[in-house]
Image 1 (cartoon, one colour):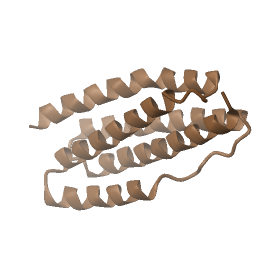
Image 2: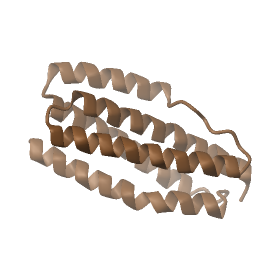
Image 3: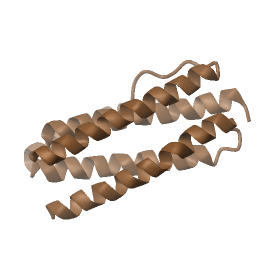
Image 4: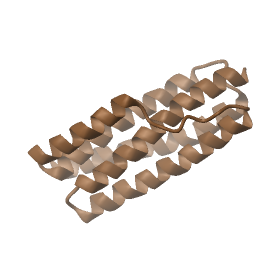
Length: 147
């Protein structure tokens, strides 16, 4: 259990949460239906709250939080915009966030497997795992609804 290992893991998670938030914002932009726009906007707000909690934990551990998402996610958001122009916007938005959420869930799982995480960092991540799973199920439901 080291602060340094926890800070590194949490910063990795923070970058991915930032990507997720921005992905949901983009999905809300390109979605056609108001119900989807609202869902994506609420998920973006949730990712923002998660990011704030992770950022606070990093500071508490003596680290400096990362401020930006990854380059890969920026490219993915550009692709989302192009994809939406070529197909139904709701489907493009759902497909894009589904891919991003799976990536985020895997990041959480990998971080939680790290034996060097401090107990407080582990607790923080475990507290959000249920929400991530629920979001995944909701996205699956939305995907079925648009098929």
